[in-house]
Structure formats: structure tokens, C-alpha cells
Image (tube, rainbow, N blue to C red; front, side, top):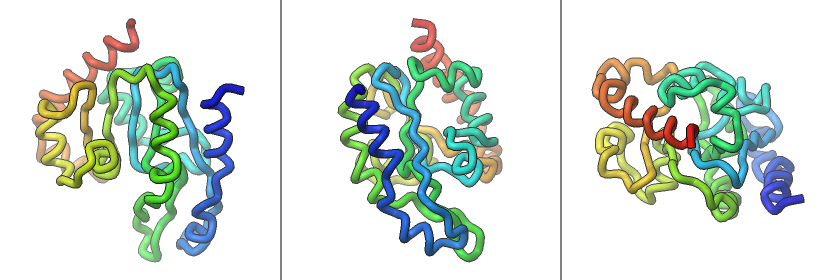
Length: 198
């Protein structure tokens, strides 16, 4: 068993947040969704699985995933090919809903426990897609509004592209910020395609 396989086995068996999840409105059990390979050249750093992904056990099997793949210009087959893409959410588990039915934030203990070990085992990464504010804060080390970070995408570190979350809830944001799909998305697709075609 490789070191990455050992690590992913440990992540899948993680139950650090079991008591917290039991106290949510969904009262669910942990189900870490892991999609990682040391061969991947592209990292999708996201937020946390939603309820559909919690049920499927596979990341981005929801409308957010459809939109993200459309932004990236990739097929499902390419997206789920671990030689191309690994997916590292801020929390590997669905955090649940609060009493009003709103998404709870990703538990910070997840990234603190696992992310450094994961990143150490991914030497081939050439492109990091930072999807949403939680991923941007973790990987860039500071908290700024998502719109500000994404608008300044050209100033991001080499090999990093910040993105808004592809949730349907951000449809209004996309309409208010047409520059995103007009300017950033073509560059994103070009960067992704170059790595997939290598």
C-alpha cells in the first residue's frame, strides 16, 4: 500500500466530527469523501461535500459539479481521472444544515488535521483551483471577500486560479460580474486543457 493509500484510508475512517454532526439538523454520520492521487497535476480545492455528494460518496456529483466542469472545459471522464485532477475540500465531510436549513461551515479541524499531509504527498501539482472563500483563505493565508480575490486573479501566485463557488446560489453573482465568464473562464480552460493534454 502506498503512502497516499494509507493516508486516504485514515481520512475515510476519520470520525473527529461525529458528535458535532449528530447535533446538526441533519443528524448525520461522518462520511469523508476522498478523491486524491499523487499523480494529479490539477487540484480542485473546494469547500465541503453537499448532501448529494454525501449520499453518492463521489465529489461534485451535483449541479455545482456540472457548472465547475463547464467552467474548466472538461468532461466528467477527464474531471474524475486521478491522473489529471485531485479534489481537496476544506472539509472532507458534509457539515450538515442548521435549524433553518442553511449550510453549516466546514469544520476547521478537518483541514488542520489532514491538509498538510495531503499536500506533502502531491508533488506533481501544477495548477490549484481555489473554489470559494474557505479554500482561498486556507491556501492564500488571508481572508478577503471572494469577489475581491477572484477579481484579482491575475495577481494570484503562479499556478493558482481563485474561483467563486459554482453553487446555483451564485447565479446572481455571475450575472453581476460578467467579467468572470468573459475574461477568467477562457484562461482557466486554457490552463486546464494544457495540463490534460500533456
